[in-house]
Length: 132
Image (cartoon, rainbow, N blue to C red):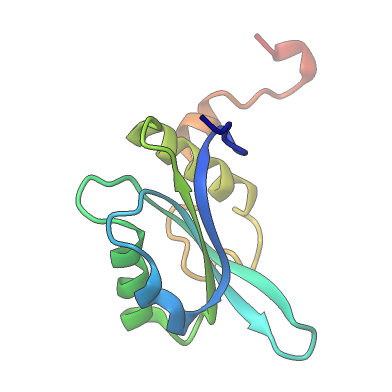
């Protein structure tokens, strides 16, 4: 039996054009990122980080929703599918971490309504001496 390359993630589909959304398999659980391509530099700016925990829909449905309502803001996306044994709360915590990292980024907040992740706020320490 082969050994997995990643502990949390099973598959990734990175920096794909918005036109590639139909190619994402159904019911994929994980983290996705929406980017806006800077044509002059070929850079990709993060405009949103989201998740699909698999409760109702997968990443494909989320991307389709963003495509129909906010397609002018993003041009590309990446998907990071989690392994089947990763729980819904673990997916939420991963997304929360990224949301926390990008909370003050002017580009990443274009679509981000929830700018922070409350559980990470709860464990924030003011100094190293406050660590548990």
